[in-house]
Length: 179
Image (tube, rainbow, N blue to C red; front, side):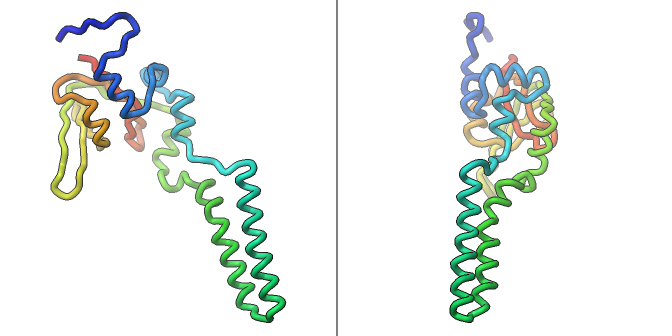
């Protein structure tokens, strides 16, 4: 296979993978060194509740508890006070969920905290399963990755690739065709 690439030009197959996996040449260079790029760390970090969003949420919780609590006191229906505390607590759940999102994907969170990227290089096989669900897989040197249809289409059935991924979660960060 011959390619007519000039210095600094990216092969078309790698370009397709760049779009599907959302990485750029700087990300790839960091991944080749065995580390996450600053851009990838930012993209993979769970969202944080900060600044005005936090104060708006806390203000709503206080307002809900205050209104329902006042109604409970003035009407003598003390059950409304219990409901106020419950509703106020539930209103604060988004704060807890955003703050502690790491518990939803603990392997990914640990991978991002460590910042270590590993690679596997070799011949590539890809296949799709449609028996129970639409699932796409790419196998590189006997390592199997479940991928999206866009990533699947970026890999050609024949050829060698290097895949850079997070060790615990096995999330593919970047890939490049090497042969």
